[in-house]
Amino acid sequence: GLRILRQDLWETILCFIISQQNNIARITKCVENLCSLFGETCYNKSEQVYNSIPTAERLAACTPEDLAPVRLGKWNVAEADQKAVDLEAVRHMDYAHAKAELLRLTGVGIKVAECICLFALHHIDAFPVDTHIRQMLDAHYPKGFPLKRYKGFAGVMQQYAFYYELSLKG
Image 1 (cartoon, rainbow, N blue to C red):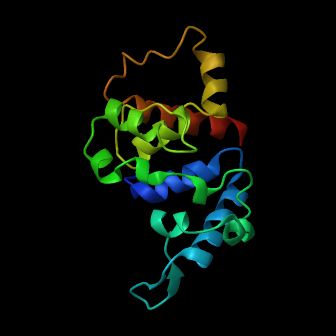
Image 2 (image 1 turned 120 degrees about the horizontal axis):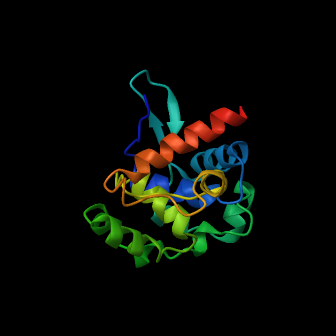
């Protein structure tokens, strides 16, 4: 029953940048604040109101003072030059090129680029290494994870390992 979603590219970029050095409750609050302050008001099929993820253009127009209530910490999304990367082109790139292009974005490092490749672009060979995966690799694969063995679906194996490791702790 493991699922790897194809999430919206911009939403995934924004959320994974925010996720760095944060816990789930704080990430959720930051995203909710961004949406309520800068997203568009929308209605679902049941006419319930919600706010969308703000566009890159909308956030780029914000000043640090505008963003202060969101409490993003040191990273300021308004300063990120997201126009340096053509996200539409990234959608059509292979894994290696998409990852390289995403690394050009302010606030995106290797782990975040891997997460974006896996969860937004569905490059299931992406293998994000966070704290939990690093601990699992150190404990069970001291000589390194056999990525070649799982070529083409290493990200699926990463997600099973992530789930398994968290279930042991829970």
